[in-house]
Amino acid sequence: MGPIAIVTGAASGIGASCAHVLTGLGFTVVGLDLRQAPACARSIVVDVSDAQAVDDAFATVERELGPIDAVVAAAGYYERIDILDLDESAVDRMVAVLIDGTANVGRSALRRMLPRGRGSICTIGSELGLCGDADAAHYAACKGAVHAMTKTIAREAAPLGVRVNCVAPGPTDTPLMTTEMRDPSYIASLVLQRLVEPGEIAHMVAFVLDADGHNLVGQIISPNAGAVV
Amino acid sequence: MTRKLTGIAGRVAMVTGAGQGIGRAIAERLAAEGARVVVNDLNPDTATEVAEVIGGIAVPFDCADRAGVQRGVQVAAETLGPIELCVVNHAYMKMAPFVDEDPVDWQRTMDVNLKGALWVLQTTARPMVAGGYGRIVCISSEWGITGWPQAGAYATSKGGIISLVRSAARALGPRGVTVNAIAPGVTLTPQLQVDADSAGISYDEMVNVYARDVPLGRLGRPTDIAAVAAYLVSEPAGALVGQVISANGGSLT
Image (cartoon, rainbow over all chains, first blue to last red):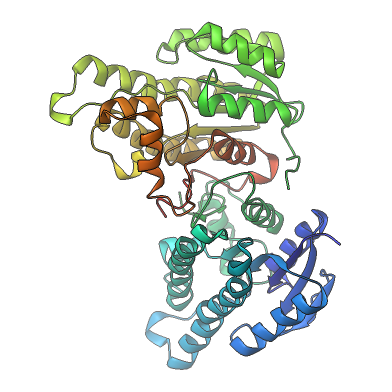
């Protein structure tokens, strides 16, 4: 059995693509998602906003498969709501999934990796966390928070032997894409005049996780087809 | 886990300033990935030595000399075929207080680091655009983002490279050529001796001083930067456009 990776949000989109690429590189991938993740060797149904459930899932993986080498925190969702119409429930839900979800996964990973002095974590940010989004301020704000959280965790964990970085995708061709983002006029506004392929994100994630060969720590790397240069 | 990257094997790659330090590590890594490597350096001896070690060709020229760059790239293309991967790595550095900056050194720094990057980028990009495919990586510096005392000329030129890269990326992305930058933190290269001399301490003392501020607990190695450069010229990196990747062990996040 190869090294063990946990990928959250592994049932679809970028998470599924990460699971696929990591599996191809020899990882045994465990998917954590609200539903079964067919691309993974093993699938655990869990809501990342539930800290206890996340930690239980990590404990199960370590008990049944062994020490976790790599973690990808990809669980998330996108929705467009005008900033004047954002109500507490919409904001709370986004905070719970993107910020608390990433923090929960990060804590469960670090609790196990730090004592061993090895391991690698990649969070998933967003191009919109770098430049903002007029149609989804709550999403952009939460992704910006994920970026800052990643940098903080990275600075704490690096001296203890654990690498943390973030890949911040641009508009990627996944089920999260809205019809507005598929509009030809939007696509024409991108430098490359095309969407990002999920595989391009997954390969970037795999490179970042493979911490033996490089010294990336706390970086936000954004394959975004030129949406934010 | 070191793995083969796709889109490098069989392609012609040029690395400028590849006679030593980071450039040499990049040339070695790209050769290991199967590229046919054009080893450029100002110093013909080091270029030849590296080329012999990795099985590439040495094409020495001064990147500050536009016509010389054009001749060198032409010679390289006639020997190995069109260059599709280019790493603009060459650099010149002297340290001095900003107000006492020697105008000749200042100009040489801009000529080599900033204008030289443009000449190499421009010269290699033209045939890439004609072929519809290319990957260009420019080596900037953490100091190009933060600035650095006693390194005003160097930091200025390296900050300029970042804006150059963003502009080139916007101009060339639609034509099939990606352009990105790496901003290494302090890295274990012969250039560190310049810092040590400026501070009046030994190379090893300088390494310890700089390493204190790095969360990873060590300075960068040339191979760290080479790994990032190799990824950026690989095929799956095609959605990276005008990005600046800071490879610094966490010293700047």
